[in-house]
Length: 324
Picture 1 (cartoon, rainbow, N blue to C red):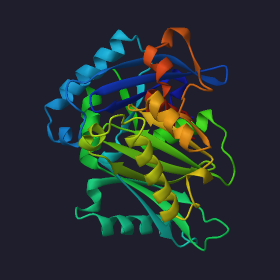
Picture 2 (picture 1 turned 90 degrees about the vertical axis):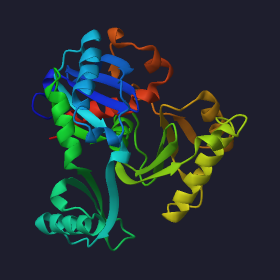
Picture 3 (picture 1 turned 90 degrees about the horizontal axis):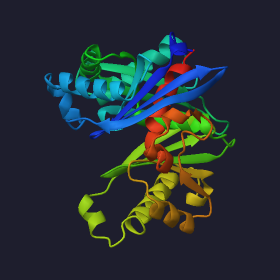
Picture 4 (picture 1 turned 45 degrees about the horizontal axis):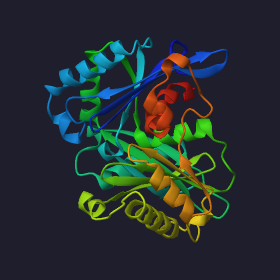
């Protein structure tokens, strides 16, 4: 457990102008959610915001306001960045690479991808061991501009919170999945983040994160459909998931997935129902409260009707408890 995690951790996510916070507390050897809250930020949280130093005070005000009116107690926070703000790359590597040799190879891979000097980025990576049918291993590399992290540090200096970690939304959602659902060995699972103008697919196997891809869909395409949640989005999701499965040789179709879990701000009953009618596999909203107890005072109407909207901030809070 990370230092000071026993005093509670707040997971924070901002998607466009939607701000959400989840306070996670340990008690009697278990984790429970002591507070949930949602609010708004005045300025959309896009990549361009990091270029405006004056906005640090505005974001700090929005965080402080929600923190205070919702009576949060914890001071340690994990903040999630949208995947659009980072670079996530999966590369094959020699299975024999370990330690410093592996780190040197990761840095070399980054230098091949970016025009700017490597020291302008903060780099992290996860080693994915080879499977019996592979003669190579893989590494998932995550790179974020150092200026983005420095911007966040300035924001939190003006709040009542201490920024303990920065996470990426797709990995936070994966952590929420791991904490609430039992993995099925040797079977693939899809996580789909439904956003305003795109959907993000993440594929996991057992507990291992394998890949992530985004698919844009222009709003005018959706508007052209009489029932976008019943027709346009389900068809697009099925088509793109099948393409990903075939491209990465994960199987022959969507039915070979163990399950599909939907999360984000644009999940509707019509969408879920349409997918369930199309595919005879487990398809449901990702519920981050399935196994993590929510205290009565933490109840929030949106968390009850759309628990999947809180998946990322719950997963962010879990990060501190997952660290050794």
